[in-house]
Length: 350
Ligand SMILES: Nc1ncnc2c1ncn2[C@@H]1O[C@H](COP(=O)(O)OP(=O)(O)OP(=O)(O)O)[C@@H](O)[C@H]1O
Ligand code: SF4
Ligand SMILES: [Mg+2]
Image (cartoon, rainbow, N blue to C red; front, side, top):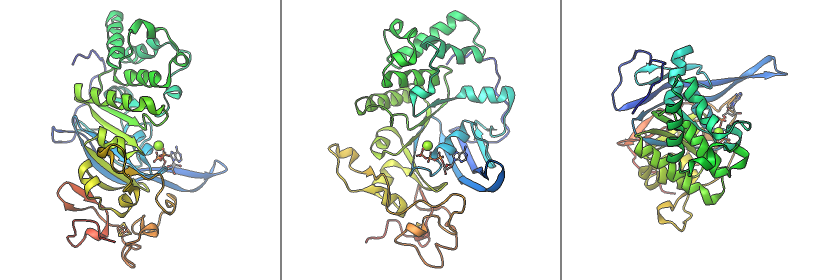
């Protein structure tokens, strides 16, 4: 792919398998909680010791209840939040503390699709300026080259005829069209990673599938890695290869989507899933909005397993004392739960 970005990539400092685009290692993201805005009260442990790898051209989904830390994790990968501890390794470079030109380089490698397209677009800029801005900032000096890229980006997101869209302001477009502009802007620097945080949840049901299809098409055509956050498991199967379940700042289960739907292991994942059938057999399981009970405080999380106050299988003296490590009861299927310590490979029958 062509790129005339002037900002060079920093040198790799870590050895990393070439198939892996991004590695997250022991990542902690905490926010300081202050009383009256100044006196320290505690820390919100929004992301607590998270580890995973993302392969090149792979799409992964992150699911979990509201407030479990999904956006905090994503914003840290975008360097909108800085980690308290841990590393984010992108193509062998630890990007978590980049500054200046190197930070600019990293930002050109990662596209961001926000939840609310209208809020994400500057209201007083026409579409051509919205798409021109990242090119100018990243040193694409040739105006004709910029115009060519803007047209290509709009064609790729099916906003055609391009002339009808170029001079429109965001408020003149429908929600679905606005989200296509957001996606075109995210793609215009030809990133290697696309981060999409609930990209269809604020759109009319009628356009959600179209936007997800578009994201899938772009992922396949550009060999993009994608991180997709959602509450809706029916769209996960459609969109991603692997799924990560997050609970109270921790990744509690990671596996291929079929593995999760056919053999969910973590009691929280099981609580999220219902047997509700949908018209489409492929989507036969759907996320419940809220499993019974309340998620814990992230300021004073429970000792041991953070799910233990809500868990029907909690083992007294174990789950409320010791935090479970990662077990891999089935190859490629990782779960943080003491139930899998002794070789069990499926969820206990009721
Ligand atoms: N900038 C911040 N300052 C303080 N606390 C924050 C900040 N950003 C997030 N939090 C807190 O971190 C926790 C995780 O929030 P986050 O937005 O990551 O959750 P989420 O899983 O994305 O939720 P939702 O599904 O509602 O978008 C919440 O308790 C939230 O209040
Ligand atoms: S570790 Fe214990 S409390 Fe936590 S999910 Fe597993 S069984 Fe339940
Ligand atoms: Mg969020």
